[in-house]
Length: 362
Image (cartoon, rainbow, N blue to C red; front, side, top):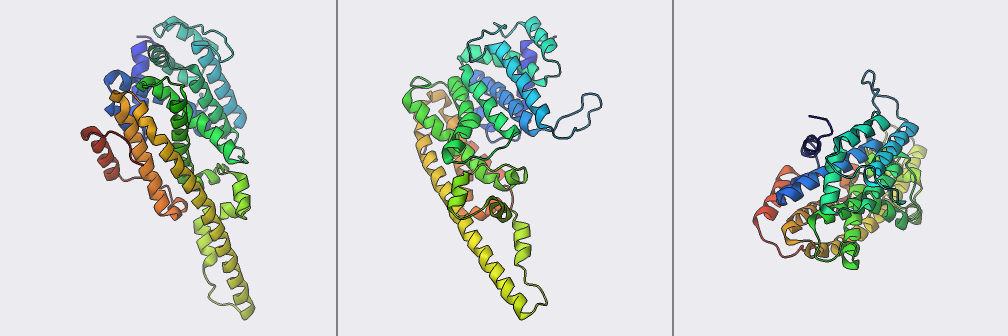
């Protein structure tokens, strides 16, 4: 059987999804079988696309890890965009060269056009669900715009800039998912768009807060620069506060020091506490903002077809519980990655599997 046979492609997507450590994948079990399969395929596409920014480059000759190269990552991303345009058509109106998910020969020709593009084997399955569920092309390409932002990290001056990024990497996937789940109002109607955008920001802002320290170590700051300055912090100070181990070491009192040293030490502690207070205010405003978006995202539950509401309910509940964990103790985000326990995850899964729910309660 060809590597580009539809069933082979579907199985590959399922393997990618089921082997992932994701908050989303367990929720797919709450869907009818056809929609569950479609979500696994969509997840495999998003996972591969996201990995173009995050995964190291591998030398195809010997399998060794190559030095990080922005140019090489952008080349792979551009190759992936071209393969998607050949499969689905471009947003500029260019038509696709592949009409059907079972055109194995056409997908093999893509391999000749784009050698070394591992994601090609996902495309027959992706083509199938795009045709079956009438998934719009725009979200598939908007995700890539967000991934490009991660390949070439840059600072976001305002919250509006950050929100645009959230829509690219999160809301885009949300709209593709909603096409699969089905909505009680048209997909791009005002109430669906408003709630879906709120959901994208709520989920992604939770990720941003959870990963604050890790992202900073990777030279990525997703919080608005104007807000960092507003609270009297420089980027270097912001980063030093995230480096909590180093920060705590500096606070230790030396064993032997003179009166002058003692004064200098207490002055340093005073300045550090001032920085911490400013940092806490900065984080608090992010938490307050995120809570509003969760509230505005909750009505999306009623706008989804009844047979798919539980999957959204579980996703919303998981992320909201993670957000509450951060909100209850913001210092956790500088001590390590905040996560739900396996017990908490299982409790939420069984709740949405077994109990009826008419709405999400923020």
